[in-house]
Length: 407
Image 1 (spheres, rainbow, N blue to C red):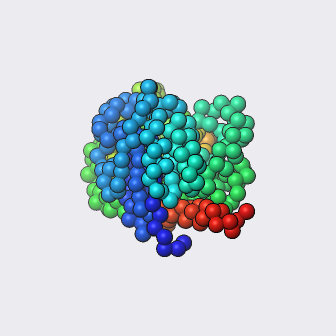
Image 2 (image 1 turned 60 degrees about the vertical axis):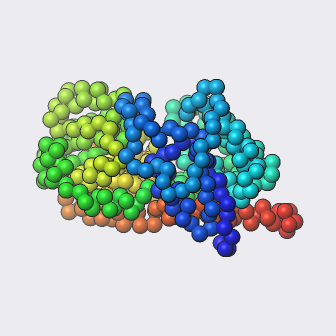
Image 3 (image 1 turned 45 degrees about the vertical axis):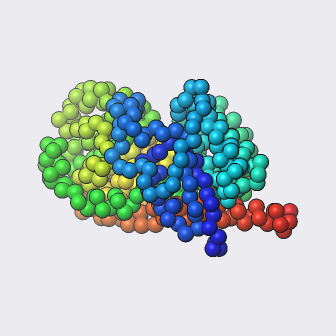
């Protein structure tokens, strides 16, 4: 890359706890002059989170360390999850009059605002970067008819971008399968604030945390962290744990959601309720203590575009077991080294892995060290370098087109 400093507009649906560290890193990059535009301000104030069933107020700064603006949402039915839920027409004027060198659209094509931004940027020839965290065509709801529709639509959609950014090597493979030119694809690792997670996990008193859970210091503890939803398949883990029946072992659920009551009922029916702990919703600043106080993290999801909880666990020296539907498996989970991958829904395989790993504390500790070491080059730094690389590549290509040196 050269020395040019690119005036860059990044547009997001709303402030997100996982995005804030990367935005701060981006704001300090020598080649990026950053402005962030939010289409809504959800998460800034305490918000009822339906999936958790509680009012959530994130206890980490979401808007500090970078320049940002709120673009008024003019939707007649504002909200996330529906096409007209975000209709921020002010983005049209912002992009056309902002003298930007590049626009990075992170709202997703399912919102009207995405198409407003794309049209505005295309109308004046500004390079556009957007992408997806998907690594497969199969949708979350499993609807089969959507697969051929995506197979037809996505190549046309992503070829509208000057650069397609993807968070995993699985995403690269998917884009290549859709015939997106390799020079248009850039890896931007899906990352959390590595420095913060390592720092905070180093302060944890495992014995004290376990005492709060009424778990002894020498017990084996398995962790699930996330919303208790059907597609994350927490029941699979509960059943595998019960079948493994490992002496002095415990299962901890950190998170809340619609399946909590059914999990509690099944734990009682399986005779393991006394060895299962439900922590409810755990805010960000408490999570390092949760991960660090456990021996093994399991994510049994049937759909997980990436799964940054895997990053969090590994940064806290916690090896992982994930299903073969979890996007993080492509780059972070090395079988037998940082964790294991098993066939989604195969409870017998999951039970076998629990028995194998919890049989050796020395092996778990070594895998925990290897897990943290794997995260050395998977951080916001690599994410931002990927974005900067993409902006530079797109801008130079546009310049050559304008100069007539590319046909």
